[in-house]
Image 1 (tube, one colour):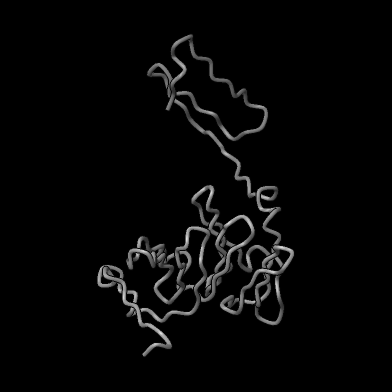
Image 2 (image 1 turned 90 degrees about the vertical axis):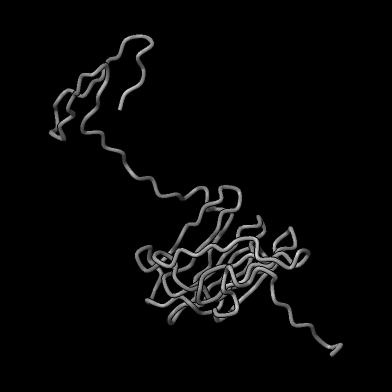
Amino acid sequence: TDRFETVKAVNEEKFNLLSSNLFGLDEDEKGYLWITGSSGLFIYDPATNTIIEQKNDNEQKGGLSRICFDNDGNAWANGSSGIWCYLTARKKWIGFSNEDGLPGSTFDGIIAKRKNGDIVAGLEGAIAIFHPDQLTQHQKVFPIVITEATANKHTISFPLITGTPKKLIVSHGSNYFS
């Protein structure tokens, strides 16, 4: 018919897109369609009629429900395991869940961008408003603890006991240690 067109990507068999329940899609600045479903996220290029990438980490994110983009081109998606943001500049996913203070235990409601650029997500009994422009200001910093190092074939222990000297001295040109 002239009213609509049914599209099947030429490489669909490789990604099994059609065997996944599809729940959301949005278009990025390059014209790619980001499609969310029970098998994760698919990125589809309408110009070549191909799926160019599948971002599926079922152990971490699981299926994804809805998707939208913020003003910086970062993708925001929600699913059973939390609210996820794909930082396009870093090519990295960050997630938010009840461990970060979000209410409830299911996060696959609605997600949308407000006119001011904030991202609004429907949660279990509440909504959460994310401020994408503040993402870089509030990153989790994990401490690094070095308990042992080897330099010049000598192993040095760094005990966790307070007050114990913790110093590693290497000679010039020997600044590699493991």
